[in-house]
Image 1 (cartoon, rainbow, N blue to C red):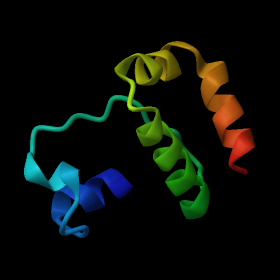
Image 2 (image 1 turned 90 degrees about the vertical axis):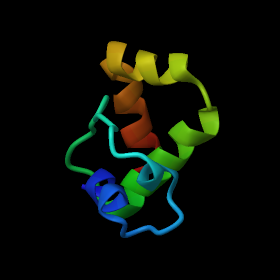
Image 3 (image 1 turned 120 degrees about the vertical axis):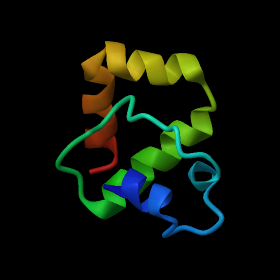
Image 4 (image 1 turned 30 degrees about the vertical axis):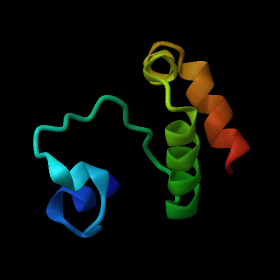
Length: 70
């Protein structure tokens, strides 16, 4: 899982490395690496807590992201 790589220090300049109390809020399974990175980039570019909450609340949003970045 990329999240674990961030916490382990694989990415030296990663924002997630600066603290160790992160919790997984949302996980999308069975993605290829390229697809996961594209979705991660999209979600981060939204810069919206509400958008992330809606991803968890409305699974159809996740389905659209997965198909968009397939």
